[in-house]
Image (cartoon, helix red, strand yellow):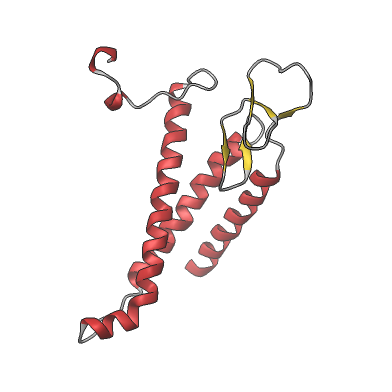
Length: 153
């Protein structure tokens, strides 16, 4: 049953990836830039509600795909954390360090890659959720209170 659920989670993640990466984020096709639209330097388009140009999905995140992007990050994080748990449970003991490394070397490398990707996904999702919670004006990314100078607290 766990294999089926994990496979469905990965499938959902892939489907959301293609949805977010191929979706129109809110491109504006006019000479006059409307309010709350910003020009993306990466793809050379004006995007309504422009958040950022994401290199992972190779598309802008804007007013039309921001919600799906957040859901994609959350599903991706769940799949990565589950993969981390699977990788951790797969290690086998061995008599010597050299033998252990030969038996578990690939799994250790996979664990490192999945761990790094999990941290990247976690920090990206956390940053987006923080920005959603404080609702800053368009184009203003406010640092967390711990990073602000003392006189601004």
